[in-house]
Amino acid sequence: MTIAYTPFSPEVRANPYPFYRALRDGAPVYFIESLGAYAVSRYADVHFVLTHPELFSSDAMRTMFISAKPGADPTRDPELLAGMVSIAQALPFTPHEMITARQLISVDPPEHGVMRKIVSRGFTPRRIASYEARVREVVADCMRRLYANGEFDLVRDFAIPVPTVIIAEMLGIEPDRHEDFKRWSDVVISQSSGSRRGQSLRKSGYIEVIRELSHYLVEVIEARRAKPAEDLVTTLIAAQEDGGVLTPMEVVAFTLLLLVAGNETTTNLIGNTVNTLLAHPEQLETVRRRPEMVPAVIEETLRYEGPIQFLFRRTREEVTIAGTTLPPNAFVMPILGSANRDERQFPNPDVFDVERDTTGHVGFGLGAHYCLGASLARLEARIAVEALVDELPRLRRRSSVIEYVDSFLIRGPHHLELAWAA
Image (cartoon, rainbow, N blue to C red; front, side, top):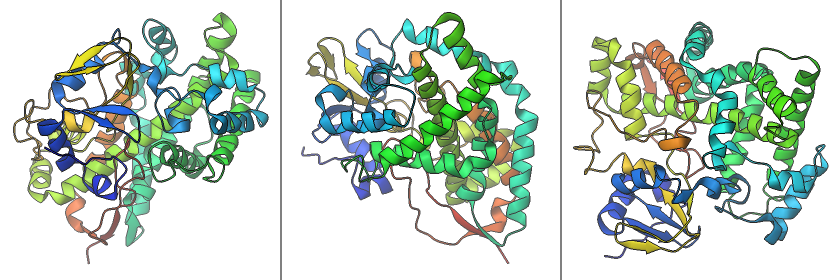
């Protein structure tokens, strides 16, 4: 069976799931030449990759969001090195400090556990519960704006500001700059996994955006260093100053990661949930009759149309997956979106069913690198959908065409143009 699959094609971006099924059935381990990586598509194999860090290292994620290739080496890539030097010139760091800075998403146990523990206190069940009142305030404010307009973009006017304001306040930075935060993260995502991928870092505008974002974060960090507060940036600074667990550059990298991940995941989870409910009016009616099912809706969306589609790993030694033997240092792409649609794990996987048992879905990853902010994303999405669910029947789409986010890693509607029905 001949399978032609590239995650960058417009057809895949519009609807990747038939392609995932073809991979699962005909090529469960498929080499993507343009990425130099093996796509792994079946649930059992994705589960295996994510739960065996002794065989699969997360360091493949290290330069993904700069070079768009897993495991790229700046010391051997002149353009990548020049880009990092250009960024460093705008910051109080050397290129060497930038290249060697560790990132939470790309370190392995046991070092990963030490770094994760630094910020995990900001994501404990008690701390997450304490954010509920503030999330409700932000959602209510967004709803007032929607009511005041006959037409609106639900992504721009609702799904983006809700999580962006919350993560900004958690970090201790200005929530009124949420449009800048989204612009910055969009460029990062597009450069690494969308239409900017393969373009010159400088020509694509990526270098300028990273310089602007990093310069802003350095200013925030230095202000918090002078005047500590009860926020995550202060926590990161303390980890650097008290025990040397983080370097100053790693404080910046950690803050950037929390800012980007804190808005991208929930924005697209909210967008996917609303878009899917609008496409399945019978499921929407079930939830309207039984609003206590909203958490189940969120879980089914994470399975059916999750915001995170791929992760990256590197083999530490020779390993066999689904009959294919991979050499040491091979790059592997576990496809979360495919695992969650695997009929070997979930009956009728292409059916959106809010009453389904979603136990075991990998919408937030699995293992040591399970999404740190999963509980926060669930809280924000639940409150957002609770506020919207009774209003959705009154809304009509202004366009039948859904343009998705410019990324194969992230999935969600770029816009969701709606209007109140007359």
